[in-house]
Length: 183
View: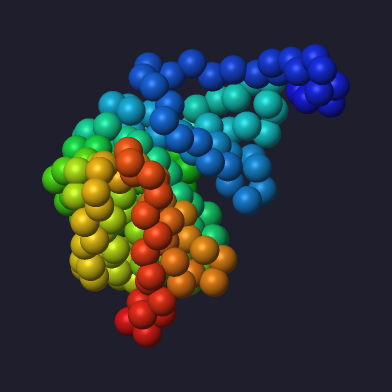
């Protein structure tokens, strides 16, 4: 509760069995999706923020790092340090199911989705930025791999989606991705 910014108060808590490395909320803010390390994806009901309850989970079989949700809230795009990108059907929160995956062997970390959700920009810890065609989640294809000087940790896209900004251990790399609009 931050209604009094000088005195914030904890109003609820959910204990996980591993580190939570990323969290995102559903559009209606009734569910929280956690990347919970070796646990994978945890889905919480947060309608009552004083008493969040686990309603579903999906073990990614590695170390879940980051989550992005589809605009319609039916798919979770989870990066897994050991297994790459995993796309999970979360339309039934109690029974999430894997739709597809793409192996990134060097450590998938962060993800940004294009606004039309046909492309995923995944940071590969050792190799840079991997751009994937995810328009068919059951048949993900690599479009391009861009090497970085230093480990790639985070990625965000410009509003017009012509540039990808990649945070590395040595600074920020800005990549022109404008040509991808035509792919």
